[in-house]
Image 1: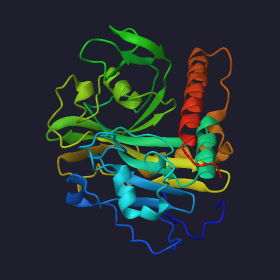
Image 2: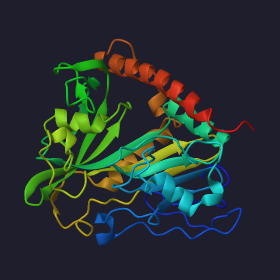
Image 3: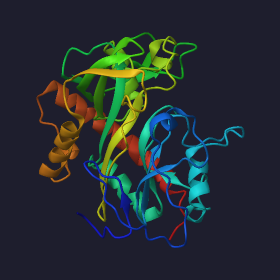
Image 4: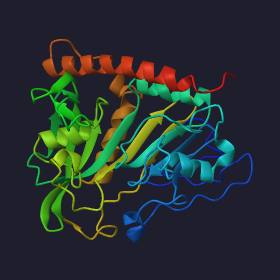
Length: 342
């Protein structure tokens, strides 16, 4: 176990680490993650689930019906407002919103999201992302039964410039696709089953690059759009109560502490009776353990390895990562500048 684990609260994959939080002042006790019917209800100001907490970081289980933040006056319920409600003493008045997120999740995506509580922590997290040390994996229900048990998706993704679709991304070669960049996602089939009587597949998705809507676009491109994804199903999939995409596993090995959490799986029959699993292909716990073992075996630098020249797929991925690093550098400079100088 890395760093001083005292004073940290964490829900780790394969078992939670228990311990008393060491707050600077009294705080409300974190509420348990939503179970059963609660998981299907809209978010409220106080149903914030804390997966991990230390003096430098908080990891939350973002609700599927709440934005991270918003400048719209009418959108008062956001993850930012939930954090300010729960931890008013931790909000930084020298930042625009009060809390700084180390990465992003779409409005309709739930799951693990890391928050840095000071400038040094924000910088250490950014370095992990820059050096490709972060491991992220998502759970999803996708339409149809995916035949291959494992697959790599390599469609380049760009911005859609077609009128009425400029809020979307698109794959290279489609009409109006501007400035496509190489992308790569890994897909592992977990279970075949049905949702409301229609065939679906439960999958684990690992983005090896970080484009906007990457997993949603890639799943749609292979003919298996994510259940409930109204945008990338050509406005056809409006029946489910949410989009079935969830940030399940997050590992950030900072220099001071190892942040490693699993956000409880919402795609189980006990929480949504519309989902009926029929056949297990890969077990989730074993698949996550594979990802953890790879990170450990490579000294937490698995994703930072340079591609071997000569392999077309690896060269494309290396190019994609180089482009992404520049984007991340600019973004990091912008949000680190919001922190007061220490």
